[in-house]
Length: 105
Image (cartoon, rainbow, N blue to C red):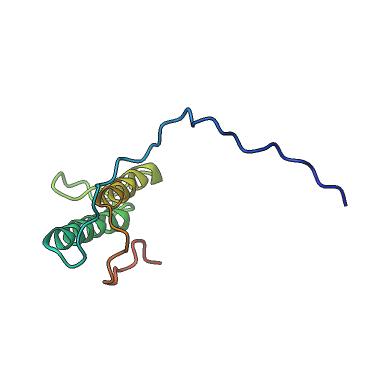
């Protein structure tokens, strides 16, 4: 069996900036007020995403009705925004409360 040699790792700094936002210097204190606010914010937005996903096939034309996602890109943007908030929070562990499935079967 012949192995293909690989080049050595580059020692040059990356030319591409990280797409991730800069996290906090100190992570949120577990069980603190700000962590509780973060969990509440994430929970509210996950419920909203779940609702928009559930109503994506709705044929309601009422202007006051919530609009469902028209494509996965819209849902991905909302999910990415939440991931960025968690990243910026500097949380090293995830909340230990169970979240309902984001996209139920």
